[in-house]
Image 1 (cartoon, one colour):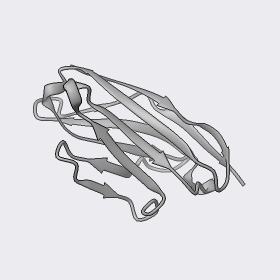
Image 2 (image 1 turned 90 degrees about the horizontal axis):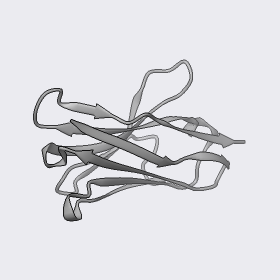
Image 3 (image 1 turned 90 degrees about the vertical axis):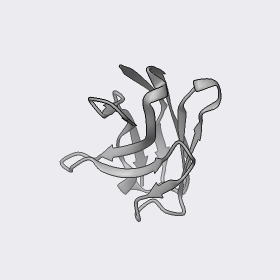
Length: 119
């Protein structure tokens, strides 16, 4: 089992910045890729950014150049961060931390944290 605890988020004006963090606990040695997904009201959950254990990153086109994902694997800490700059109202969503693991159930989700960007 892996538990994911998110922090950060909140309300910010358009153009502002916010940071999210997610710390994994439990069987963290099984974790490969970690990432952030988001779900806006009435829309499907979508990828924001992911990062592999080796540090390779992937971003949705809509956040490239504005969001930065990073990861701390030191001492089996397995914390992933998302720095969000130049935020837009369309970034408003619940942001979910995700961990992909090598054994069943292969993926875990955090509880989600709300990010609201006002215009």
